[in-house]
Length: 203
Image (cartoon, rainbow, N blue to C red):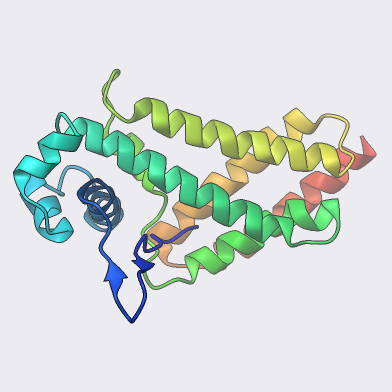
């Protein structure tokens, strides 16, 4: 639901300050992890994309594991910013809740959509204790928390229960869109969410 934003800043007279090595490493890793996966993105390829020397990598990170965590945390920051901006632009609590799926549809329609980095990473980092597992869990917990808050704001008595159901629709829409390329998965998710919301309000 987010794209990597450039961290370059203008320094006047048409000059653009180049981001530091740490920032470039994180952004290059994040981009590659999204495009080709964590395992396929080797250190040498990340260094080449970032345009930094291997010495710079070990100056900022003890190895690839720490870079994985940093990239996931940065992706999470970008996701939160985009999520809050898109959902918060809606007028009513109900519209904000269902607007989550409109935001998904816009994301699915992007030519660079490669599924959810966190779901993809969870599949690659399957072993207990793998670097990044905590960041993945924290990200998904935040999304669930947002759905719970939006449900409560919409007047749902059992906001936590509805949030859990909507989370299944949210994740399912992402998986279907990634596998089939159908952006309409978000519309189906929204239609099902509207039914669940109606039932939750009348319970």
